[in-house]
Image 1: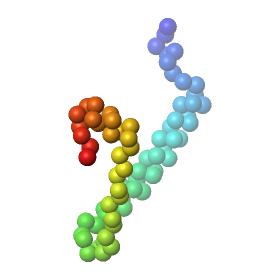
Image 2: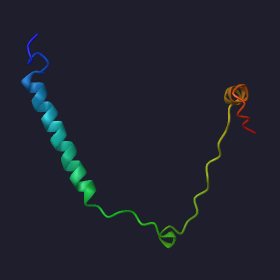
Image 3: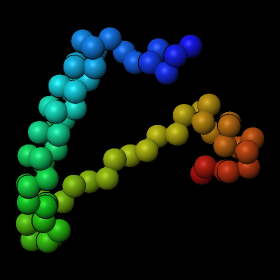
Image 4: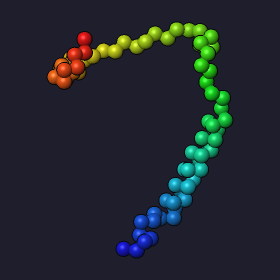
Length: 70
């Protein structure tokens, strides 16, 4: 085995480089966007919390582990 046996085919290496280039361009666009606001007055609506349903199987498993999901 030579040190070059691990290298992929040149076409695959080129495709990898092009994919990296596209991802870097996308990251560059995202990096210069302003951060989302953390001020409450900019989010005037209230968002209800989702209900969490615990299945019977999860309940049995939790009880077996002594977690007691009540």
